Amino acid sequence: MKKIFTLIAVAMMALGVNAQTHFEANPEGLEIVPANTVLTDNEFFKATTVYESKGGANNYTYANGAAFTHQFQLRVANNPSADFPYGEQQSECTPVIIDAKQNITFSAHVRTGNNKEVCMYEVATSSKLTSTNEFLEDGSNYLWSWTWTLEAGKQYVITEKGGTGRLSGFTAAVATAGGDTGSGDTGSGDTGSGDNTGGGVTGETSKVILFYPDGVEGANAMDLQEGFKIAITGNAEKNLSSGNNITVGGSAYKSIKISNGAQNTLTLPEGKVATKITLYSYVNHNEAKREDQKGGEKDQSGHGYRWCYWKEVAGTTYTQETAVLFSTFVDGIRQADNSVTLDETALQNPDAQTFELANLSAVTFTNTGEQPCIVIEVEYGNGSATGINNVTTSTIDVNAPVYNISGQQVSKNYKGIVIMNGKKYINK
Image: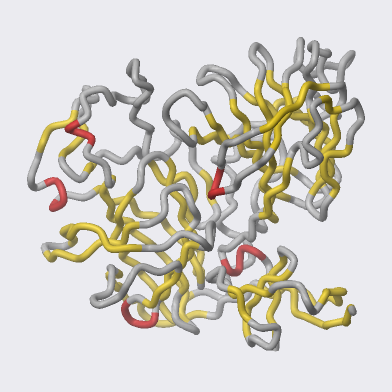
């Protein structure tokens, strides 16, 4: 039975949280995927093959713990052009057409070689979009996630040239308001501004240092000092836990060990907005003890250091080229020549990166590479955080599961901000 609810639609950036949804690339488990096969047609996008492709089983787990059961071969002989808008056919392989229905952050999860590139082109212009990518697993599996920002109403095509990728799945989330959604550099768009700016801070600002609270067991979400809250919103199955003490301003604080690669959301107390955030961190990795791990190179056993940095803060994305790379490890400091010096005082000198914020009531941040442990300093003040765009009427199945912003399933009578069918609402 369906029931009509009138709900206030909340802009994704108002929360700094985007609900991610995963989709199988080969949901029927076909050994041969025919040309013009609709792989998925959902609220975010429609995905369609161009040519016939060879499929098969898949036993790998990709981004945020998403597991996909089957894959098929992704490749073109030549990249998209005016003569071949989807790319020229490669035997037993296909590109994939993506028709975007909303402004979305879109990821393709592909098993491919380390020196290969999965590309996204806008079909109308044959222009290549700038991507961010993440290597998800060491060793011989070569699992990658490639991410782009797509614009509603436009058609795109995913390709790989020079190698054959195994496309396993997709992930989509509504893009943050105010960001660049075209073919520009996803790392340079002002995606952090959104609609969560309100009327500015009134009065003087304050500072607070946030750290792992005493006597608290690991959890997906937890209360911090002075009414602040933190949650792993990128993966509800992962928990925050305690790390080593690190020194900030001459005092030692127990660090928060976050889930590697999953988005986190820091929520301010009601009526407060953040103007600046500093993330103090060290990499939870015994780098100095691993002489085979040097700057992204791999040894014969397949081990290798992954570049570590904040790939997203407050909706703005960064790449290896635009980010400040982490240099403090649990047991030492990475030097300019890429060597790591053992240093018992490393945790007294954590990495510190500061980000200016546009009066946000919630701040997201996501790492890539190896797992970091953090202490957070926030500058904040009194302010009105808006972000409510308009009133809409939606048809919702009352039996669909409902989640709070911490990713925990709640009852349909739960009051406040809820996630249902991949969308966020205020339920009053």
